[in-house]
Image: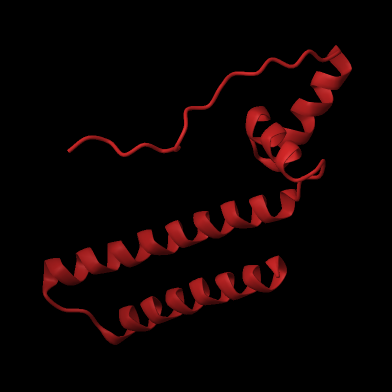
Length: 113
């Protein structure tokens, strides 16, 4: 089975000429938002000239935190599978991690709406 296409139509290249100061500003703003310059420019164009970089940063932070918590849960699962036993403190840690994930998601949902 082949790879599914990421986009319905292929993207086309587009060249933009900037003065050095403009390029520095673009690099600075895209870097501060955690986006590549091309992504930042696409968002500028599609959003009518403004980019809400807070949501992008919040999403990245949420994804990183969920990944870290998932890693901790995987480590506990490995221990449980190895020893065929899991104690109450580990179950409480997992429940705590799940509460952290839910809290992060709710915090971001409130900020995004």
